[in-house]
Image 1 (cartoon, rainbow, N blue to C red):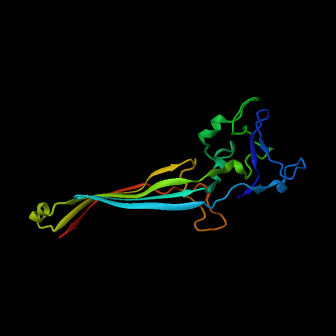
Image 2: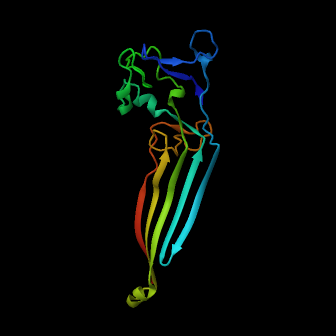
Image 3: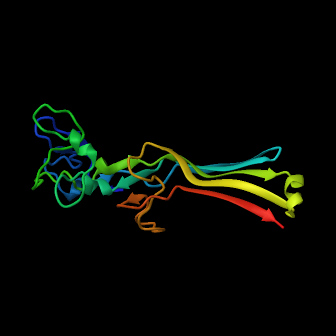
Length: 205
């Protein structure tokens, strides 16, 4: 990710302080720098199938570590202007001299460009997720064969059940441009992966 580096909110003005990379006292496009990396240090997963008598548990956990996410959604939901609904994060915005916060002041004109593309919107995208889980019970054959069924299996399947992450967006497993390598790990009002629950029964006649 390439943009401006935020040094936090100035308690005296409520504006973001930008890192003057070239040291000329002027903040312009020459002060942009690398502000994050969408590429994880490593990814992995863990799968297991546990069987105890007629019960069976199959689970898959996946994880990613060391990648950043550019949360472009926050550019709009923390803008404090325009038609977009605002995040509750703006309740902690700077209001008066001396306030210490990471949310800048509300400004209709935003002369400091507090919402420019910057490290302010780059977040840790590491996560661990219980991606799939299936719990099943194989009914005893002698019970079901009495009614002409060879076998029966009752099951519950869940997807995206639990996610552990520090990412503030709705889903750390995100890329709003699909498989694009130019805009990896960018979140822009991206709909999260659904959490689903399925109950069913398999019958063999």
